[in-house]
Image (cartoon, rainbow, N blue to C red; front, side):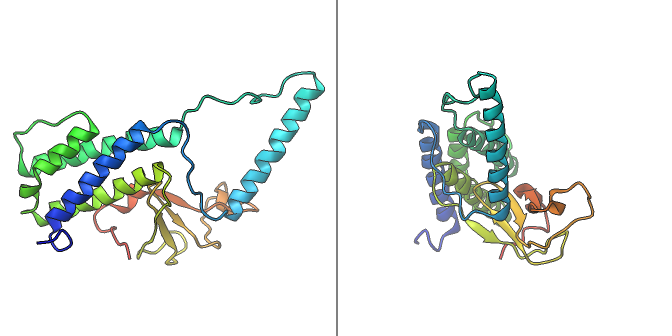
Length: 222
């Protein structure tokens, strides 16, 4: 049977791709150029404010005969890459624990992302017999692979959620899979917090961690 029709084979393919791309991300050197998407009004406003602030600080330092801060390039540490590698490794640890608890409770957990993926792959024949566990493994594998692909510079996948925004009630929630975020794209979305950025002259959008929308009863992706 082809992998297209066999969920267990599809899970194996997804895990193998995640393992390969995770290794590529660990071996990547320097900064990776990532597609930011179309600039939103808040991005443009933030960039403008940052430019004015930097310009004022630079002029102030020059007027005192001092060298502007940041004139030399910073060390090439890709913080996005580091965060993704850490988050994915931790999530794989949780996934490995969940799989072992359900189908191999006497098996010891491992300590690296590659080994954790290897453990899950070895247990797939047993996982395949537990429908809800197999569905969880496949969903987590897709989510983590999206994060790794974003880290490698691939275009970020944006998914529309079926759930309504808990603040404005509109069907305007979008999942940014590469950054593991959910955001409301309704420009009129306002909350009751007077200090929230949604009330600024150029409002920022409400955002939540992707994990908040993976709790039972909230996995409603259209």
